[in-house]
Image (cartoon, rainbow, N blue to C red; front, top):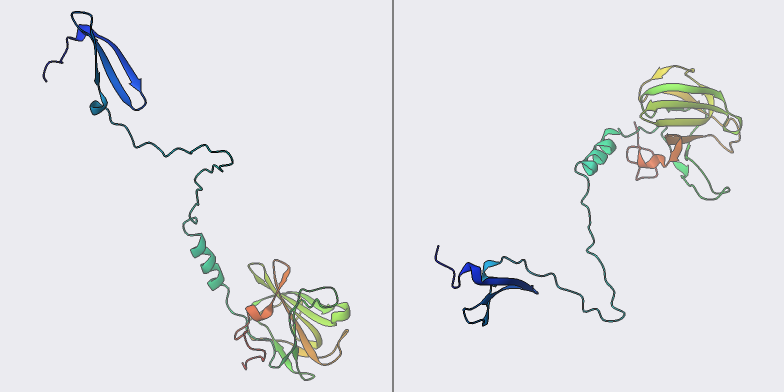
Length: 214
């Protein structure tokens, strides 16, 4: 390294002005000299400052967090893990699902059928309710696990009992008009954690209004 331009004993002051640093020296006759030291500094680029004009809105940078890794994938896997339900009855949907007002609320779908026609389990599960259910007449509730259950109402006859284990497509009841029913049909509901969901969203070929053949 070379010698400094002035003896170190003659350095009397270092001053930082803005982003620059200066060294002040006192010469042998009392004269003062200054030398910038900016070439020895590594100063980051300054952040643009606001103009500070009246009425100007100042805002901090908005951090937009990315999705938690795997969250979307796990949700998709859960949807794929729910098997499509089979249609419980061959027939035409005469009344759809609705969560509207009290008069328009219909927590399932009605499938037209003939008296005595076979009603089948939409999916494998355990019968947790079987018997007369007021205005729903002869009814069944099947628990499929994972918070899913199906409800079958207005049957003329029940073919399974409380506690029975049933498989998908197994006969469980026969179409009737028990309870408060205007005609022979099946009232069918799907519930997730005891909340009604549109059965057509889980039934095979649910986009169509006519039940597919088994």
